Image (tube, rainbow, N blue to C red; front, side, top):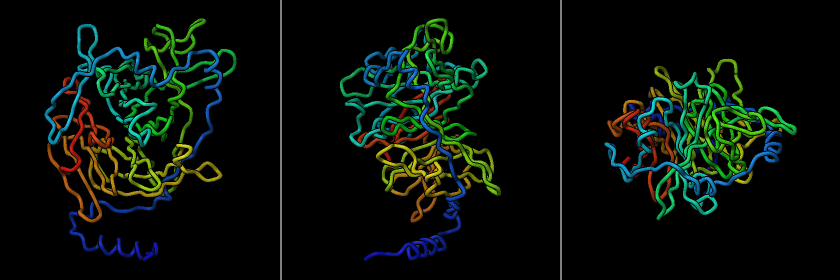
Length: 378
């Protein structure tokens, strides 16, 4: 039997009214209040292609230079875990120059679970407290293939600045990169006040060794990194009277919705936070937008939970990590629940990978682990 939209809305409203008051912490708000303006594709990338070696994800994975030891962190309902390299001369476990933030996997990128045949994790790191944040953000490419030694290579995010015969790029300074989603060949990265930045995974560049950035003499450098990933597009937040500006703190992917959607949320120390969904075009891998390049949210909710670090939805159920170590869940049928002390330290972004679980990570130096949780426990 076909049910009208009005009937569904009435049924939902009735169900919400019947919930105990403790369950009413989530509330639907006006989705059309949340819009993004899409840019075009960067013209400079074609010019960079002409002067720099273009590398594939597979080639970067074949050139990993740091190990990811298996770990058993103090995390409840953990199914698997790994950490970062910590050896003489190199220490991603304890460094205070870089902090891990976002996570996404090749399952987000492709329904097969692999990208060009490889199972991969991507993890973002920010350098807010290092060198005045001028180095921006980097992405760890983690080889998760069966039988392979788990290892990673860090790649710097960059923004093209000028085209022509001598094109250039710069680091995306002050980019917190609190959440990331890999979708097809595109990597979506949240920019706290700006909106979404989009990087093209099919245009990874190899550069020369050196601590400069961009074109240095006849070569290109990237603060010592061998590879850079260029920004190709933006989705800029569109302010609206009467609506407080969205804080783009984290992003997850809902592959169980139709169409699939990005799930963007806010970290706030006080007051009500929001989680907003933007539908994705599964062909172009871009946000659905109108003829004026405006992408309007498909759903928006408001909640009362503070200090949220990551969120996504699976079959209309919300999962949210909180700074104190809790994992919160919410569904319209079952209400809101706090699962306390799941993490032994500050958890961050979320990504669901079938066959592994609900991936998250912890950012605090000395207790940095990437961990898969048993989603059926929540």
